[in-house]
Image (cartoon, rainbow, N blue to C red; front, side):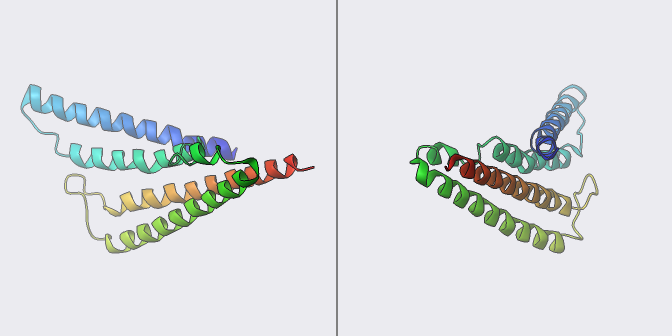
Length: 157
């Protein structure tokens, strides 16, 4: 159940948002090229969607063990060090995500009155997306660390 939620957040949402980026940018190019008009909201829509691709894509990368290429190095360690280093990496990623959540909260607090010009949407929604993605990233890290700890215990005699 939790893995399915992580997959939706880390794969489905970024894929949908990437589709939005492609459609909006394509529509803007066609509108300018064929009709000589501008799709004014295209920039704002593409920006919000692309930011969502990145924020939620980080969750997908973590879920697939591709976060920062850490597993490439940690998997080459001797078995007795591997688990400790992997757990340390999970703790570091959680600490970074908590710091990013703190920054996102500060951005939300200070961006309450600014809006995207063409859309009229509040700009804090970008920071709210970042906060949500980092919260899910923390859950992924905790789940993966717990799985590693359980597997590590089962390997011991």
